Image 1 (cartoon, rainbow, N blue to C red):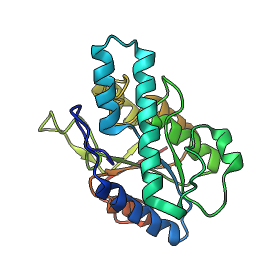
Image 2 (tube, helix red, strand yellow; image 1 turned 120 degrees about the vertical axis):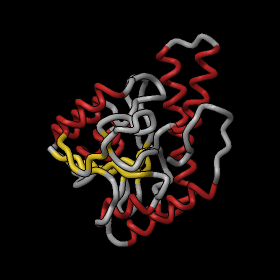
Image 3 (cartoon, helix red, strand yellow; image 1 turned 120 degrees about the horizontal axis):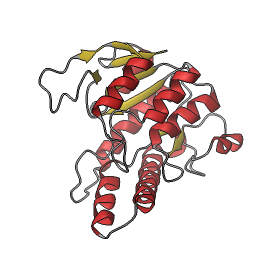
Image 4 (cartoon, rainbow, N blue to C red; image 1 turned 180 degrees about the horizontal axis):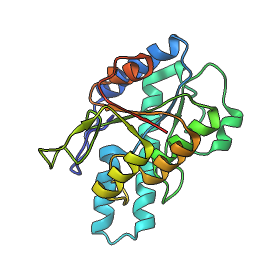
Length: 222
């Protein structure tokens, strides 16, 4: 949620990056080891929409989204300053072989066809994460899309099997719009048995609450 929703002209707000950075820095200073994966957000959707009008094939559309995640990651690194590793945007599991100690590590997309949700799952397995937090534009997991269906029910706790069913039934998996969470990412986290917390990213403090307790989102467990 660093860059909002929509597909129109992009106007990034430095203040949003700074608010996220304050929360992440505070968690880091309290002893939490953090790997942050940035999605493409509004810039990705905007570039993909323009590319689609130009007749770009799906692989090129996906690559536009990947590059947008790197821009967002670099901007977050700028907001984090010395608290973040400034040497690279983490893209591959092997990148962690050269990761410095005591820094927040910031990642983005890797290749077309692989979402940042899946990157987060790959990274979580690589570093032995105890928790994955997904900051999105809704306040948790619902039985249906709450923006469309007024009868959607929020689920405070659910299993990965239940999440996969919801994703398959309610979202489209294509460049720039992987829905609530990428199916490949869901399956990877289920295999790794790492809990996932889905929170409202419009309130960066929800990330801290997801890590330390008291969040108002949804918890997904094996």
